[in-house]
Length: 425
Ligand SMILES: *Cc1c(COP(=O)(O)O)cnc(C)c1O
View (tube, rainbow, N blue to C red):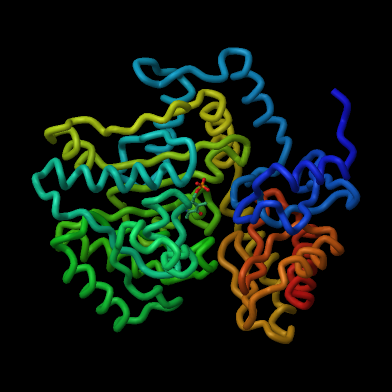
C-alpha cells in the first residue's frame, strides 16, 4: 500500500473523518502523528513534541513502552478476543482481581466495559436496577453537582454540567436530573449544609448521587476539598441513596492517591475507572460495585444485569491493563507523581504574571492555568507547538496532565508551553 503524502491524508481527513467535538467537514487542520515513543509524539512537519496531555489522561507510562508492547504481543499470539458470554479467560479474571485489590475496601465485583461512557451507563443502570429490584422504582433520578463531566452517551450526558453538556440543546430528550451547585475549592460548611439539604429533599426520587471525586476534569478542571465526599457518603447513607464515584480521569495515581476517593477514605457503592486503565493502549473501562448492590440486583424480578458489550472483557486490552497496573504498582509511583506535582508548581508559577490569567493550580500530576476569557484554541495550540509541546487547551483553560515518566527538563518545557499558550491564546 503506497503511503499517503501529508496533503492527501489531510484532504481525506477533512472530507471523511469526524474528530472529537468537531464540525463536518473539519475547519481546523489536525497534526499528523507518525509514531510516538516515551513522552514524545513524532508529528509530520514539526518533529518531536513532548506530550502534555497523556492522550487525555491515559498514557501514564508514555508511548511504545517495551513492557506494555510485550504484554500486547504475548496476548496477540494467544488470542485477541473471544466473546465473554459463557466464556472467561485469565487476563480478564486477573484484571478483576487486581482492581478489587487496589480499589477502596468494599468494592468486590467488576463489570468490564469498553469505554468510560459505557462504564458510567452501567453504573447508572446498576443503581436504577437496584432500586427497582427492591420494589422502589420511583427512585430513578440522579443527583450531581454542576461542573462535572461523565461522558458523551445519553445517561452520562444527563449528569454532565448542564451548560458544558449543552442540556439546552437536548431539552426534552435528556433525562432530567437534580443539580447542586458546583463544589467550592475549600471546605465551606454552608455549602455542605446545602448539599445535604438537596440530597435529603430529593432522596425519595433519587437512585444515586454521582460525582467525580476531588477533581472535576473535562467539565472545567476544578479541584475541591475531599471533605465533601464524606458529606456525600453520610447523607447518602442516612437517606437511602447510592453513591457513585467516577474515577475515570482521577484513577491510577493521577491526583497523588491511587484513587481520589482515598483522599477522603470513603468507599462509594459503585465506582467507574477507565482512561489510564490500559496505560493508554486500548479502550477499556470498568464498573466496580459492592456486594450490597450486586445482591440487590440479583434478588430482583429480573435477577441479571442486562448489559453485555460485544467486546466485553477484551483479552488484549485486559492483558495490557494487567501489565500497566503491574508497572504502576511496581514503582514508587507516589514519589513520581509528587515529583511531577512540584515540577509543575515551579514550571507554571510564571503563568500567574500573565495578563488575563485568573488562576494557576496544581494537584498531583495535573496543572491548570485558567484565563478570564475563552481561548483562541488554534493560536494557543500553535504557541505550544512552537515550544515543542502538545497541548489541547479548551474554553478558558490551558492545562496539562503529563505521563508519569516525564523528566524534569520536559516538565519545564511543558511549563514554558503552557505559559506561551496562555499568552497567545
Ligand atoms: C473521559 C471521561 C469519561 C468518558 O470516558 P470515555 O472513555 O471518553 O467514554 C467519563 N467520566 C470522566 C470523569 C472522564 O474523564
